[in-house]
Length: 255
Image 1 (cartoon, rainbow, N blue to C red):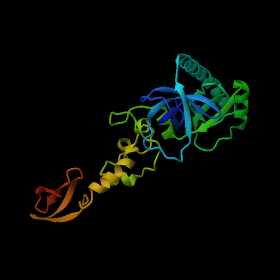
Image 2 (image 1 turned 45 degrees about the vertical axis):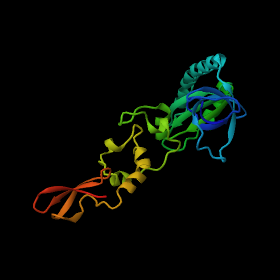
Image 3 (image 1 turned 120 degrees about the horizontal axis):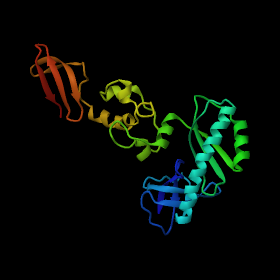
């Protein structure tokens, strides 16, 4: 069985394989990774697994000893944040710390941060390695990645798409919002990350299919009752509202 696993609490999604374990979603597992072992949670059955992706061996379901170690590491990660912030202030680096986490064996500490541009953190890296006596990974992420790590609710009232099922961030353009007939008010089409909502991208192809053969809003068309201007388009019902030259408004359905 192959499963998709979220590494640690904030790490990447990886693929794990097991011969004798049948795992449910959210099961906490111990998995081989990065020249050692680490922990993660099962995200889903890897139905879309590509042979190009490396497979890691799932060793076991996390036991109580593993869970105690993970909780201890989370406490240590909070303490590590304080050290990191002090060092950033000392070197006057333009970095915003997002999250910190330890590997299960405590041999690696990962700091996730955002920054406007490239940051020279070589001296910071040396200092952190001396303090924690472990391998240090400073991982710069974008604001969309930050939202994915922190989680939250979208304007639709559901958990963020990037947290629940999106694997990769695709480019989203204002053109998509226009063709989907949405308000171009930034506050209405932006996610909690401040960027255009990811759903504009994966809904776009559906809108294009449903819009085939329909006139665009503002277009002048001929109707059985005379010429008029399209004032509204509903791609889901495939109906358009038209204002005729005499001021009358009618609705026309398209097969």
